[in-house]
Image 1: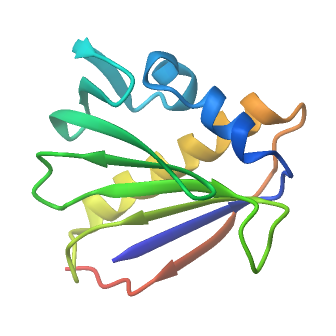
Image 2 (image 1 turned 180 degrees about the vertical axis):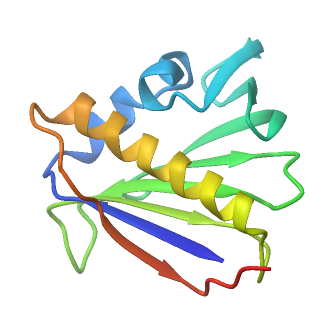
Length: 141
């Protein structure tokens, strides 16, 4: 399954990578908190879905985050400056599931909205009212 969020803010890839570190996790999301060791690429975190190792990887256009031990293979990218729309921030979250329970769907929606609001706070002075939402391959149990 895939979920997308687009934030209409033009920023540089380097600014994105510099601002979104595991050390600044509390600024990126209210959904996770560090519970153990952390370095530049991994942190032991806790949250609504349990305890996981959160990984951070620099990729073309931005960053990839993943919950290593997650049975749903939950991972997301935060990128900017890539075609076809180079003047926005794009969040792309994936799961290794074709169907999910309604409750999990709603938790993912909250997670993404939290990310959007946090990114807007970091990179803009005025947050959006309504996120531009696109969900592909959605199937609920």
